[in-house]
Image 1 (tube, rainbow, N blue to C red):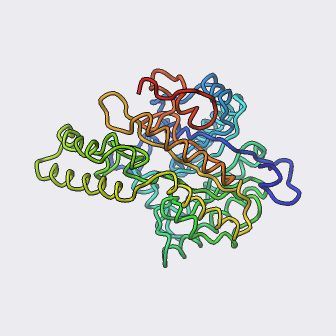
Image 2: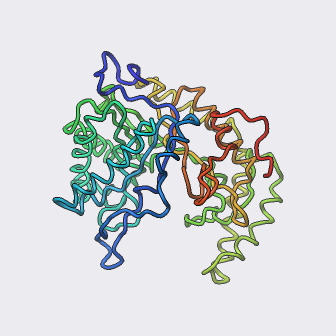
Image 3: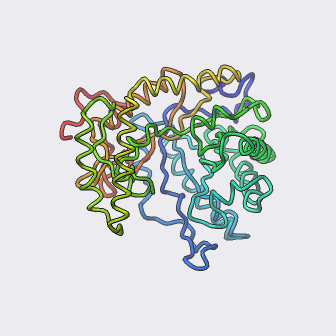
Length: 407
């Protein structure tokens, strides 16, 4: 991005650049929460399982064409701990930033309150501009910006991930106020640091379209949205979600690729394999999964859906005089089919990833693939950190004549 990102004559210290990023979402996302009373965090705060990438593995990401790591960081430890312990939390984080930099990668530090902490989690933080959790959170934003200031050439600060605030009516007005407070707090810490700002509605495309950037725009802000549409495709087989899409399997992309009878026939088998469901719950799950699958097929979803949706963001950016390369598709990915587990077939997953990446690039947007490991992984497994060549090819990072040869 360079000067185009910053507008006018940029400060050399703030010439942050990003084009092709990858999320490393399990490094600092899940602190070791106390089981009772459930409001505290154990020391040391962060887990080492799954193992975060080492310098050689980060260098492999760089060698294969990624230029930036989006690093989600749960802010709760920076609120809960005080004094020397808080300093140690910052040392732990900035040691990771150094590891990323040693591999030649830039970093977006993404402040990422999650759903599991009742006092400092995403629902508490998003409760309102005067909510105690949000007030404390603003202090973290300011201090994180201060500490990142001297690294502004290669580091950016994402102010919040997927806020649980609606993007219409009074809640959107509330989010406008909160977004300005977030930017103002960060600017108290650094006038030059590149910031990443999202709309409401859990960082959805609709949330970005509802955002009025005028009150905060200073030429040094990247605007982000996450894209997992259609959800019944991207989250098929996702055991971690509460919705019936978790019981879908082998849903194709595009929808017309294979007849609905094929994935429909798999629903009952997936539900029968689910643990903890009584007969009534299984019947409700089957009804919900079938309804979502039928809705997906009726939509006839394909690449044109992505183009139409991204075109709306392009219009929003142009209307607000925001350069296309300041639009950041901060997350996109598909649950992969692995062994006996449900998920998207390799060839369908690769088509969707390619459609997202090429459409983003056609509009001039920058992007971050989700994720390094886990259900959406680019690595082959927790034990085999070899990068998946099919994913790399779909992201345009390597050339490969055939994908999913064994899929």
